[in-house]
Amino acid sequence: MNRRIWLQSLAAASALPAAVETAQPPARLKSAICAYSFRQELQTNSMSYEDLVRLCAELEVDGLDMTVYWLPSTSDAYLMPLRRLAYRSGIDIYSISVRTDLCKPPAEQEKELALVKGWVDVAAKVGARHIRVFGGNVPKTSSENEAAGWVVELLKRASDYSGSKGVLLGLENHGGITEKAERIVDIIKRVDSPWVGINLDTGNFHSDVYRQIELCVPYAVNVQLKERVRVAGKVEESDWARVTAMLRKAGYKGYLALEYEEQEPAPTAVRRLVAKLRRTIGQVS
Image 1: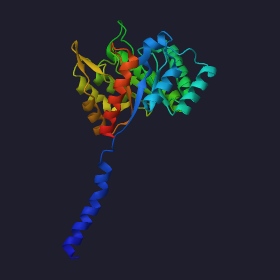
Image 2: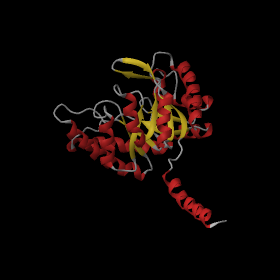
Image 3: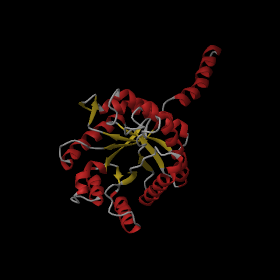
């Protein structure tokens, strides 16, 4: 080998580690169903959480995002058999979704903190590693900046506990203090905890939908996928391919949970949409 070729090969080899280091890791997506999709059935007791686990297994999705609003109990007597059923069914109850209001001034934070800690304990019992939380609404007597500071403080305190249990907190874009992506990202950056991220609901932004989704993607720890989006009062079919392209570009690794909210009965609509979800994930993964 002549000297010029040898030097060229050395230069190429020395550049390789840097290229590998800066390469974006590939996305890895898993499928899931949000229990909230079956809210009517859970409310009327025509379906149970056990039924949802069995349905997930039947439809061959990977996980269940378990909205907790209709749990008959949070006792071990109820949760432990549910966890066993999920394991035996090959289904991961990876997340629970709860109601919170984090826009609380310091004097009112203890009650909310205790609520979040209680749900962290429930999550740990069923094997979930993620909890969806709401930021809440800005009180009329406060400014948005002041309320955002309260959310930051509560998430910091709550994450100290959730992290000790191995549970992440995902702040959802759910109106109120989290109406705009820029504010959500600001909160997450200020919390600055490895145990806090964004629970990205693709159907909850009502303006500049895809731009706002893209801003949130780098901080997403869970993604809830809607069939439709609402832009300035107009309902449009959600562009799942566009969303998953953003996730792929960011190297997102985690669940895509179908959350169904339309008029068609969930037992039929979810089956149809799960098939679409699996095709969408297959195109990325």
